[in-house]
Image 1: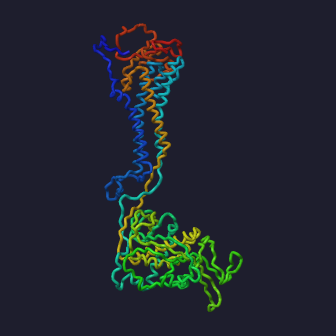
Image 2: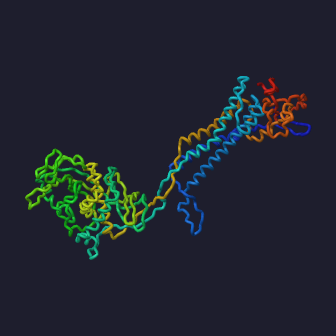
Image 3: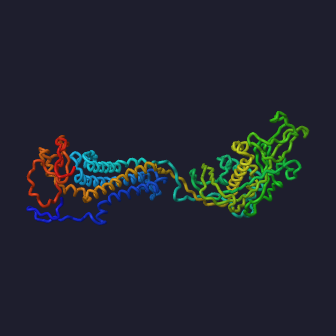
Amino acid sequence: MYSKVCQTSNNRHGCKIRNDDTGIWSTFKAWYIFVLHLLSCVGFVIMMLLWIDGHGFLTGSRSFSNSKNSTPYLHQNDLYQTEVNALVSLVLVLIRFIATAGSTLVTWRLIEVLLETCGLSLNELLGLVNRRIPITPRFESGRQFFWSLLAILVVTLSLPASLSAPLANSSLAWVPSERYTSSPRLADIRAIGRDPGPTRPDDAFGNFTLWPEDRWRPILQASVGATIDNGYAFTNDGVPLRRLFTVTNPIPVASSINLTVPFIDIKLKWIDGGPGDKRFRWLGNRDYITASGIKIDDTGIGGVFFYRDKVFNASSSRPKKATVFEGKKHILVRTARLFHDTSMPDGSLSDENTPCPSEDAQLGKLPNVRTADYPTYYNNGTRFDVRECFHVAEAEIRAGVRHMENCNLTYSSDTQHIATCYSKDSTVSLQSDLIINLSLDIMSEVIRNLRPLDTTSKYMKRGIDAYTTGMLRLAFHSAWSALTNDLGRATETISIMAPEPVVRASVARLRLYIWLGTNLALELCGGIMYLMIKWSGKKATTDPALAALTMDVRDVSHDARTAPGLCNAVSLGKGDRKLGRLGWGGRAQGDDEEEDLMECRCVRRVGFVDGGKESKEGMGGMRL
């Protein structure tokens, strides 16, 4: 036991008991390591879930060179994958270091408590200190069993925190991905100005309206562009928007672009167009269909056209001011061609009196309205040739332009770029543009050229409504883009966010939570240790080294049972491992001299309290 004042003949000094285990600050110093470990573990989980999981990090490594041949990465403030891995490993090492300090502290506190309560052998003592091996349970009494069970529980709970780091490391996976650069790149593309300007020999608008060959150039460009990735136009996800343009320096696919795009919203209403309807009396006249006088008979089933109220007038089509089109137009969709003696579904052969069918193999069931149709004859009009069947829709159209952000570049080549985006709201405000009406004028020609290329027939199976709307969208976007590239004399500056390769972190949360649980076992271990110290009435040792220095082990080192002695031993022998348990206040076997029974000792005395496997009698003053 400690004495209040210790004064020996060889060392005249007074040793007073320190009350250094009382008060809030002393309690904090005794147990702060477990609080620090808890905060570190929770902080690591927060870091993994909030600042790493789902975020993209650069590949490769950071360049610190300033040489001319070196190209340091632009994003010097961004983290690289290697740096994140190093950061995670560093934090785990620090947490393990704290856990090791906590488990070491628990081990020495447990040794002191066991020496006070149920004792422990030399073999168990070295197993605890060196390898954290739990002691064997005691069955001599209920008290012995209780304390030994708590000791086993404490040692077991102190182990997982030192072994669980691989769980946290393996919870972090890397998935190849892309993200946009933080600094946008600017580029200029052609645009249509707000004013067509005066008429002159090199006037693009004048040449387009006067000369058919100048009209064919943008029509062919639009037709070719409409064949590329045209599935976007047949979606029901909002209002799809697209622009085709050229730029000097190629832009990577999947770039995000802010630019002006053509906008068209179409609502179809199928109407009767039967015989006698004066609105469609010029149905067979190509001049009421096109702006170039082409034949519409070459398009086959699925041809979509605007039916004009009057013939296209080139001289009056030159735009005078920027406009937004809001109005109605009649749409013709070719749904059947009944040639003479065509076999019908009922087995009969068609003639000039055969009505147009109500269903098509590709378009499916057709709207229940009267079709607009006309027959053609040959042999000077004496013999029936074919009946052309059209379903008529009244299309309510809003067409203009919009400035859109974050459009996706879906196609890129040396001569063509395509940006696609979507508007969820079809009622948004539109900006006026000079070539809106011209774009509507040449849409029939664009669709006519698409049909022989057979890039849109697969969408006919979606039904006549979805197919017709998609074809009109596709033709308008392509026509407006081609006219802008051909007639545009102004420029528009677009903003480009190019994609860059990154790896995206993916954290397996279950593994991370298991790791957290295994580390929280150390806090539970500390809580049990706190109760054991309170119940045993001992001080909570703050410094493990001080705990070792305040032990007097002379009785053990010089005991007859440890012959030839442990004074200069470097390991336990086979016989030493069979020795009995140690405890506070034990006596050396065969030592009859009480060494004056000094009134005090500056260190606590450790001795044998039983005889081990070679003796069945308890020794010393411990109540076993």
